[in-house]
Every structure is written in C-alpha cells, then in structure tokens.
Image (cartoon, rainbow, N blue to C red):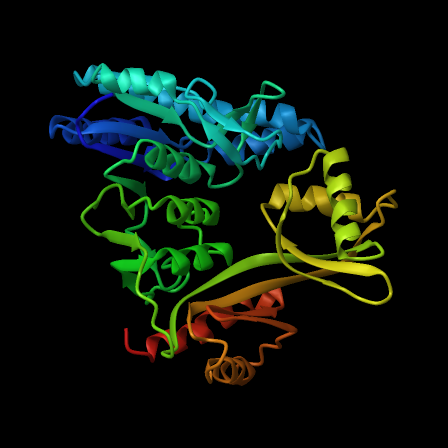
Length: 405
C-alpha cells in the first residue's frame, strides 16, 4: 500500500460536462498527484447524462425493469471514468479506471437505491501501490449474492467517495461541484444566501435530508459514522468551500442555519392492522413492481387501519409509484391525491423557541397557507402548496438574514 497521504476527490457531473472540463479537472488532479499525494478520483456522469439516459428508458417503456435501468445508467459514469483516465495519461500522470464492481463496491440486492454492505478494493490497493491515480465510477456497485450491477440512488457518487475515504483512511474527502460549498439556501433561488466555511455533520445531514442538493444525506451520515474529514467546494475555486466536522453542540441557544425544500411531497396510504404490517405491505409492493424505496418524511397510523405516508424522491420514481397507487392493487396501496411542497428551517434548538411562531406569522403575512408542520430539535418543516414554494422560501429566509451569522 502507498505510504503517501491519500486524498479522495469526487467531481460532480456539471464539473465534467464537456471534454474541456474533463481536461481541466485532469490538470488539477495531476497537480495534486505531483505534490506527492496518492489520489482516488470518483466521477459522476458527464453533465445531464443520467437524466438523458433515464428519459430514454421511460420513452422505451412506461415501467422499465430496474435491473435494466441500472445497466443503462451505470454507462454514464463509465464514460466519465474512461475519459478522465485517458486525459490523465495524456498529461503523463499514471492512471487506471475501474467500475464499481471492478473496485469491489459490494451492495445489497436493491436496484436503483442500493446500499453499500462491504468494500473489497483489491485492485485499487494494488494500483495505489504501483503509484497510479485511481479513477472510479461513482454511483454503482455489485450485489455479491445475485452478481448484478446496482446503483446507489441519486447522489450515490458522494457515498462512493466517502466509503473509499473511510476504507483507506484518507487525509480527507473532497466533494467538488459547481457551487463553492454549503449555503443557507440554494443561491440560485435565494441570491442573498449566506456561505458557510464550517458546519457539523448533523447540520449538513439534516439540510440534505430536507432537500439540500449539495450532498446526498446518506453520504454525510456515513462520513460522520466513520469520522471522514469532509470538504465541499467548487471545482474551479477549491480554496473556497465548507469544511464539515463533528462541530460543537450549542445547547440552549437557538439558531437557524439554512432553509431547504422538497418541491413534491406525495401522500399515500396502505391498509394494515398496524404500522409494521403496513410497512411490510409497502415493501412487498415495491419489490414486486421493482420500484426503489422513496424517501419517507413522515408516517402515521390511525385507528381505521390505514398508515399514511408522506414521501418524496426523484420525478421518475414518484411517477411510477403514483401510477401503481392509482390502480387497484393487492397490497392496499392507494394515493390520497395530495401533493405538497416542504420548506424546512434547519439549525439547532428550534423546537423549544419562538422560531415556529415567527415563521408561521411570516408565512401568514404573504398569504401562504400551512397545511402541516413537523418539528424536530434541529428542524422545522412546513408543508405548503407547491405554487407557494418560492414565496415561502424567500419569506422564511428573512429569519436567517435577521439573525447574527
């Protein structure tokens, strides 16, 4: 194994949108390698490739088989890894590319939303020992039981990078994107959003769970569990970013750090004698129809025998789940025909503070009706009409602007 300090770098798809972008990134990686660093580069698919491949799948089939969809989508990262390795070699930097299965990324049997169960990166270890830069296709792995290619879900390349950094005890894991770190809101939606130079794992995981696109929340949870030093920054301005650490608890002091959203939150119900049985029925339906588990934001069981779920996910998965729920099915899954948007304030000490009332008053002042609220020590989530989402985001960001940052 190489004795040089190891850095794991993950580049997002927008950083690799064109061949010129790939060549620029290759120069950055070569520069890092020349500073006596061992390097693992994890790449996403170029630009909008994943969306384009998904669109093709749904044009050919209204309900594409999840196995075949994984086979299709993993080609995007394979293109990126091969081109990156070629670009590095052209610069005189020794490099080799691997798919997730070649790299020993082992997962469960799920398609479209698999979880990593183990790493056996024998070929990566050998390549690092030989002094090569390893270029790894993110977002993918292989089920050892079924010997099938799997994908890790949207943002899965982040999880690949963190898992590799944890296994090899990397100096740090850098997630480089088209934004310069973590902000109090999406700066494309809220131009006055504040940039943070440092946040805790808990804070960022909560932001991402409730809609921040900067990282996949599972990757942050993994980084925290494994103690991986995590940095999120811009591929073009790497000196400006956000360091994610354990952080220091603030106890009694309430503070709002960010506002994030899910534009579409669907409501479903499943018949069952209890919540456990309802979840079992939902699991059977998803497995039978080869659908990935959605992100469940809340669930409640009522005495009439129904468990109601509030879920979100990518557009394609939600559309497939909605089509199933609109039909009569053997699992008792039905749609409540209700779609809302969530707007979440994240921070700490929020549940026992005046923030909830202040937020409701601000929304009332601009005629935004709040249909549901979910409270947590570190977050307050308001569910509103999708048509009111932009207005609610701008209004609630005033709470961040008015506080001392």
